[in-house]
Image (tube, rainbow, N blue to C red; front, top):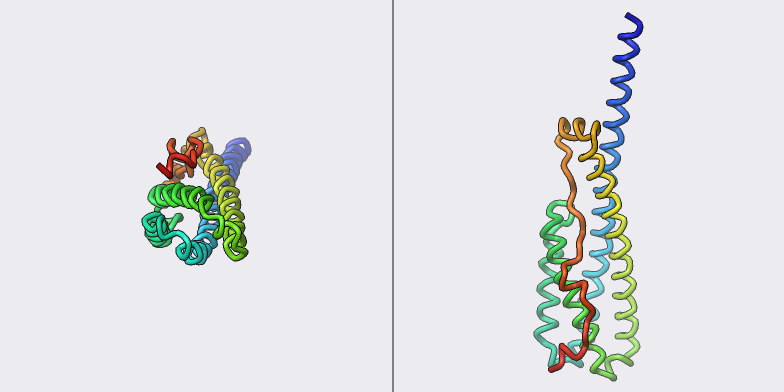
Length: 186
């Protein structure tokens, strides 16, 4: 009888520790998601100032500036926590357009040497680095959660609790290629 009680207590303890581990991993993904949201908010706040300064110099790239503004608005309206797939898609498009913008700025020596523009570009660069770090943290948290959701015995408990795998923040194939400045000015 004591052995049965001990076995039941051991099973309950294992179940509890797996449960706690899964909840911690799920919450770590939420924490990482909000870290990305914070960095994206910084990006969204930086972009209008940058575009305002640049638009005075770059009438030629007007369509690029409009696209960045539209993508920023769409991305701001999409919550990473609520819709990670759509958010990842929009953020990747916005990152791509910001890279095009950086390449475009190279053609405007007056703009490149403008102190406010230099500061804005530096701020944007810092924000982009912070976003990359937040994405790495998020992907590490997703990896931990996904492993726990897939590996036995925690997979059984995750299934009972309806804890699902999370989506990785991935870079699309076209983003992985190096940028050739000459491609934008033909």
